[in-house]
Length: 270
Ligand SMILES: C[SH](C)CC(=O)O
Image (cartoon, rainbow, N blue to C red):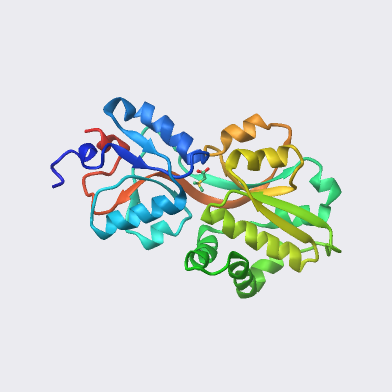
């Protein structure tokens, strides 16, 4: 019944994730700019796990659904979904995931800093680890498997990095599948190099605050320029933007491919 308007079929609801995620702020912006909110559309807060299970159920019964989506993520591998065009460019063309550190880490722990600086990988490599953890493999083990399977990559990452001699380093992250993957790989690399790495999952705002207040040393979870742009501005001068650890990420709204006539955010309103 594609001729019936989409809105009433799904209660004018976009299925989102945790409230603090940058994608939720961007979607709130889309609600007002498209204008979706003025057309009864609303954004439902839940969690990545709840959103992906609701998505899976909708697809199982070929029901319509609109979700906040992003790459890299296993949802695009597991489900036949597509990004909606974003003619007003609310979500930005593409995102880079940055590694950030507290000011002073480079001086206090140059060896670990060098490893953080030299670490970058592709969406495909990150997805390798994400698929493992999504299949229930312990993130630490999935990280170890990836490291053991990619000696050339590891050699690049650790080139010239001195042994850690037990020097501690604390990484914080937000428990999105992508950051569970990158943070565990980094922690395993640091431990293999003799550092004492600990990792802590936080909501997005406290994660940025932990770096800006020197409560933690580094994080691989800064989605920029859009998604986490506000936090980098808020803490300008207190956060060292070390490097881009992944290029080619993307954030937006996504729908199952069987929703043939919904291809742009504009189509949600017509
Ligand atoms: C959900 S994406 C991994 C990043 C973000 O939305 O802040």
